[in-house]
Image 1 (cartoon, rainbow, N blue to C red):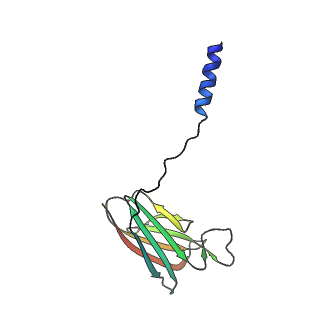
Image 2: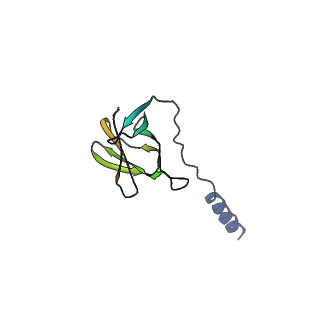
Image 3: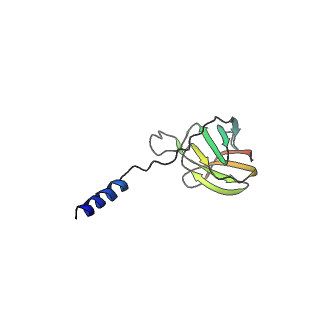
Amino acid sequence: MRLWIVAIVFVMLTGCKLNFPKPEALSTVPEVKEVEAEGTENHTWTVSHMLKGQQLFVECIVENVSFSTEGRQGKVMGRAAVYIDGAFYKSYDTAAFIVKGLASGKHTIDVKLVGESNQPLGYEKTFHVTIP
């Protein structure tokens, strides 16, 4: 009986440990490219992108557009729609995001800001990346 209690306690204790995810931090700082982009309605915004392996880090800085529902204070609600080689990839509700798992080769990346109902906000940016 005592052996069963020890075994049950052992199983419960080993199952109750913290499971930390593997960090995605980078050991080296890759080159950052920053580009001023003008949309179709003369909206100026900045898109920075950084490539590390098959991961593409993108950051969008735009005035008068908020990616969060909190603290908008008169800003237009927006999200970034990402297209890879002309095909829709994913929509992001944050100003900075990571595109993972790009295949080897040259890719054309289009970032378009859209509103809550997916209507274009007039901000578009296209850049090219090469995955080794």
